[in-house]
Image (cartoon, rainbow, N blue to C red; front, side, top):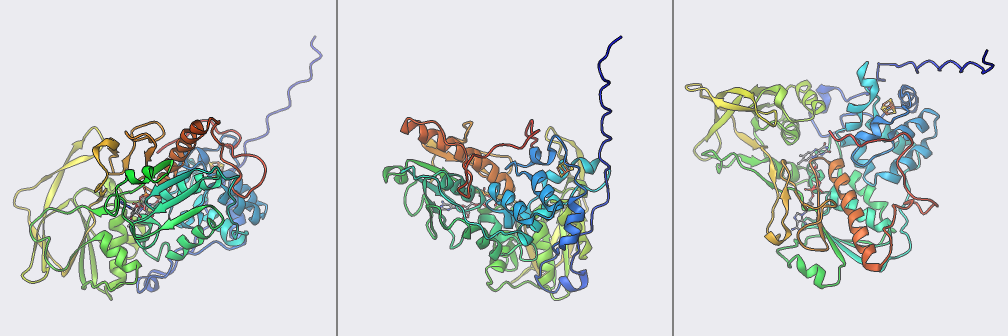
Length: 485
Ligand SMILES: Cc1cc2nc3c(=O)[nH]c(=O)nc-3n(C[C@H](O)[C@H](O)[C@H](O)COP(=O)(O)OP(=O)(O)OC[C@H]3O[C@@H](n4cnc5c(N)ncnc54)[C@H](O)[C@@H]3O)c2cc1C
Ligand code: SF4
């Protein structure tokens, strides 16, 4: 007979609470008259209750789904035990744009959260805001020992900022060239009811002790050639120019006064410049820019009507479901399967002619192509048309020697594993959301560090503790494979 003691029974699996602690919002009737913030922060008590719903998975699905591998499991654990300072530190140690991301991230982590299988996932993004609101977020990044090598970053959007942070904390001297008069890239077009300029500045303030210099109002490739940076002694260059120009509809009448590209419309609004819209506004498009445009237009319309025209169906809309829900809730009229044919008017827009479309079977990419229905034209009377049908990169001054590829959403990037371009020492990346742009920039910065370390005859520098502590960054326990949605 065996004398071995029987194995202890397995502990029961943690009980899963499928119901999210509600996130308060400004009432619809009040919030659509101005640009006040729509979502309210959790109270401390509600935050702790929500954090306690997290079952602290052994394999952190939320972290694996995050392009910057933010250790959400850990900051949620700290919030659950009311250690808000600890939660803020964990957050900021991996996310230098946390004040922005806690409000606008598309939270890929929540899609992967196991609690979603039974109910509503943990409010991971909203809890990040809790960490910053109630913990000490007044932290400053500390550079490692200077490397005495300079790196130029072209473009001060999320990708450029992430690269500047990764290289700055490793001890490189970084100069960020930005064509606009402020940094943040396309985040500068996100309306104030979701995120403000002050959020961007709060994040930038934590860079103040790094050897990172910001040069505004300088368009590389126009004001001076890109390769001048290498000739001037920069040891490497990171190009993160994003998609700063708008696509057009390509229909007659688009040049009429009253037709505005969405990027221009949203940027002017955020910069406090006069934006005139009428009381019958049509926005064309189905993505996030279209959602921000309809909701902003509604706030400017003084009780007018805002209609969204989209050529595919609701299921095909690429916009974040949270934004679509917000727009519907605020009373935006949605017209699906309608394609613009022309814009009409004499001295100003008076209407947009649309045609019904039928959707064919999904193509290889899963998208259904629209086919016009003959004789189905109709005119929607309106005095303003906002065109939100996508953006593209402005590649003026970025020649074929870089051998850049454009992603399906139009972002330019280097074809190499670490986003190397065709020119040694020049790297390029960016991405379709703030956190994606940061994730790709992080990979590129690692490759830049490896490239420069090889030139010094040294090994690459692992990411240091950005607050000057001992040790280097590592992935959390249980992490296996990155999930990229
Ligand atoms: C209206 C709107 C709403 C959005 N909402 C969200 C959201 O809620 N959540 C989310 O995650 N993402 C959102 N996005 C997408 C997100 O903003 C982008 O994915 C992200 O900003 C991409 O970062 P990037 O650094 O790659 O490029 P960009 O943000 O495009 O930054 C590129 C920067 O390079 C500069 N630049 C370009 N050419 C030059 C040059 N030659 N010389 C110097 N500087 C140059 C540009 O001025 C710009 O500042 C939104 C985008 C828009 C337009
Ligand atoms: S996946 Fe969800 S439940 Fe699991 S650790 Fe992350 S937040 Fe918690």
